[in-house]
Amino acid sequence: MGIVKISDLMHENLRVAGNALSRSINAQAEHWMRIGMLAELHPALDHREICQLLIRAEQAGGFDMATLSASLAPPAAPPQAAPQDVPRRPAAAPRKAMADARA
Image 1 (tube, one colour):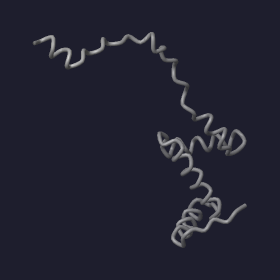
Image 2 (cartoon, one colour; image 1 turned 30 degrees about the vertical axis):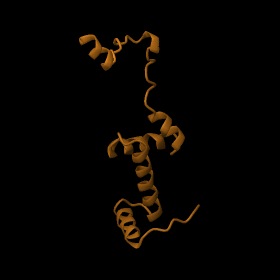
Image 3 (cartoon, rainbow, N blue to C red; image 1 turned 90 degrees about the vertical axis):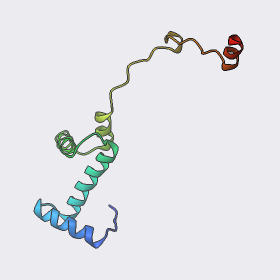
């Protein structure tokens, strides 16, 4: 366990939120850190989805960042055509050659 220094205002915010939600100050801080960490790692998720994810993680045995991240990994992209299979537009003629042809 480590010690994290926070501002007095943040400590008061943690105390108020923790009391309102029947959590200790440390439990409230950990909750906010988990949500913030997941929000930064997966910005497409909203608060509701993150909370549902945390509930499912707890039901499956607890919060494990590696497992959560693996379950949220985007599906693998379908294989793309090899460069030789991609139709190409004909190369444009150089401007000087086009000017000479007009003259």
